[in-house]
Image 1 (cartoon, rainbow, N blue to C red):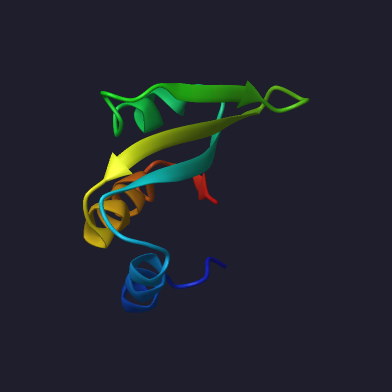
Image 2 (cartoon, rainbow, N blue to C red):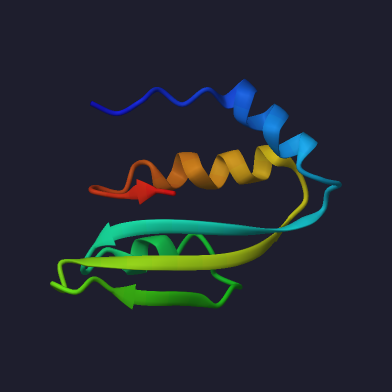
Length: 88
């Protein structure tokens, strides 16, 4: 069962983490073959990919300049609809 995402609490933590715009690191784990769906969320950014030892999953790391906390939240909401995604 997935824990419910509290946008207001997360927004407050982001605002307290430093001034915007800021370079933000996104990390997702997706089933192998779904990494292109994550890449589509970051068309202008380089994405670091690493396969799991069994090859079933791909870890993605993306650093992107974000202007507001809401922009970060929007990325996480878009990623959440990708089947099997785990947001870190």
